[in-house]
Image (cartoon, rainbow, N blue to C red; front, side, top):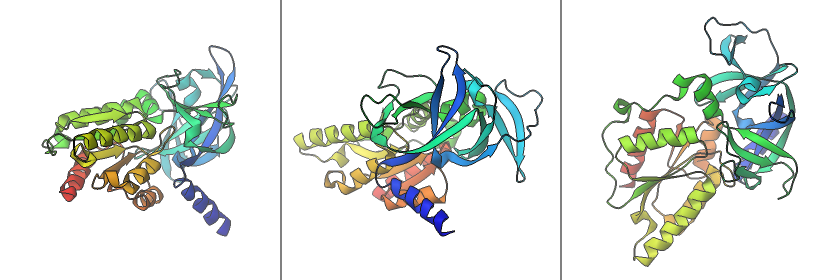
Length: 320
């Protein structure tokens, strides 16, 4: 029990140092080069890893659905991750059971290779690196070197779920967000998320709330934008608070994660009074504890339009 607690504490500590752990796995040979590449998912999303159990096919399921499994009394849908990504495995040997955005699902993979501890600075946005794909959110340099040859593609699970289960990431329903926000004149909501699916949903919601906004693709980009806003405000004899009503940030982002972004904002006197709401698929009490430890003003698990709108209103009301 002591060893288990020590492992949990070590992983918890990673959130205070812009680090995380990435589960590496293979899906078989790709259809372009015929190579077997490494893919990754944040360990915090993985509930368990199990040898391939018996799967019950479901009539009329989507082409990527293999069926369902019964794990300790819970019936969980199983998706063929190699087929989704476009790879051909020799055999599907392992199930990755994930908890993501208020749902539990399993992905079949060929093999699990390793768990590596990385700094978010080793992870580059797929869009920024010119390697953008609809299902890949970022590229991880496993060796830590600029010219490191070991790379892993970090999958965008939000995009994958939209592909295999569209109802899980449906468009925002206007009736769920309520009345328009009353932001202080001249202010915006600054949002940060590396998933194009999440950015689309956030934008829909903020538009329905009639909230002026800017959306960035990483914590680093949001931090750089905040610094630029602070400089502009100072030149006008104003504060950053006169320009930014609220920051809405994801947790998992290349180069700088949401924990580090939040901590930077809360420790910088230039941004005093600007509330931060964390909006993440990493749900659970442990992550909520981390959120409180870095000083965030609110936490919402993705994606619930009504809860997000209510949280933003509550935080802005407390801001006065």
